[in-house]
Image (tube, rainbow, N blue to C red; front, side):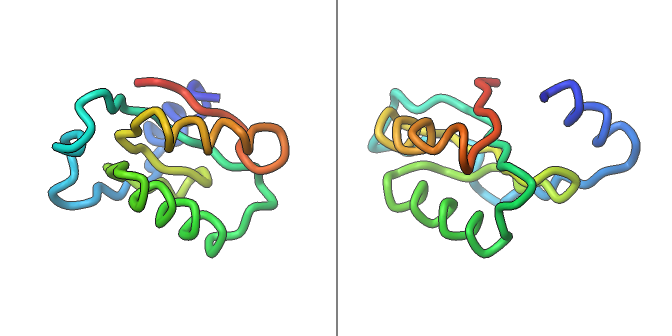
Length: 97
């Protein structure tokens, strides 16, 4: 999956950085950076809802991708666990970067 992301970005795909969000939440120093890729049927509105949920759990979104349905974020254990529970139906892959 991440090979496909690299190819898409190299071919001119866009990665939209989210301003001022490149460090883990001060409250959660255990946060790590992940790329979350959603299944093709997931709508942009649903992705925005998941982004909002991640932010409410202390996560920080660093990039939103428009070639693939996904985003990069600094996630603490709770936010990561919640996204992992969606793998299979909603989330295609979660990779640490």
